[in-house]
Image 1 (cartoon, rainbow over the protein chains, first blue to last red):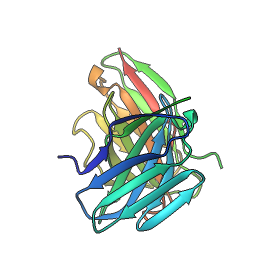
Image 2: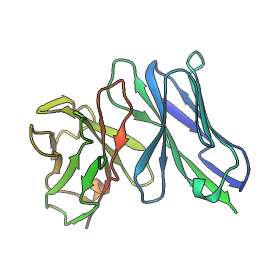
Image 3: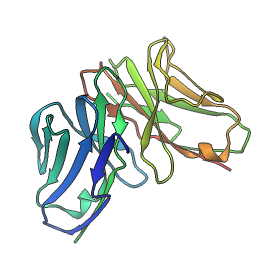
Amino acid sequence: KNEVEQSPQNLTAQEGEFITINCSYSVGISALHWLQQHPGGGIVSLFMLSSGKKKHGRLIATINIQEKHSSLHITASHPRDSAVYICAVRPQGAQKLVFGQGTRLTINP
Amino acid sequence: NAGVMQNPRHLVRRRGQEARLRCSPMKGHSHVYWYRQLPEEGLKFMVYLQKENIIDESGMPKERFSAEFPKEGPSILRIQQVVRGDSAAYFCASSQDSSYGYTFGSGTRLTVV
């Protein structure tokens, strides 16, 4: 079992829908990151969380440390949101990131 | 501030050749991380370096792979005698220190033919 599990693996939705991507992890962490990767493209850091909730534009990220769970929400989704969204954790005492397998999101117009 | 610069963006090597991948961290960042993304797989940690020091190389294959981050110049990931299984996207990230977020480069896509 991977230390970081994301669900769903693939998600297709219509423009305007509310999107939720989930991430569960099994180790103690110092921080959790949400990343975005477009096909053939680089990786963009969306959020770094250690507690609570953060919001940036139409994106919201939450984390529950006790339940070892985080969610990424996208409101009023748009085709340009189509990308792979990756959850990554920095285990306590470590410097490296451990990644989930990613969620491939497709937003149809 | 140009962000994390990786070059080349694409690299094609024949089996047995050497591949050198370069990463210039963001200005002011002294921590560099290399990650590999194999086709249809997730990202995996390879190595963590600070200036002139390898801090954690637990994700590096024991043979053919090496990394450095000299006092001057970019960090280099070197793969000797490449094989087809080395074909992947190699990403570099940098940070100011571990309590800050990471900035990723655009990656180098290595193809071994």
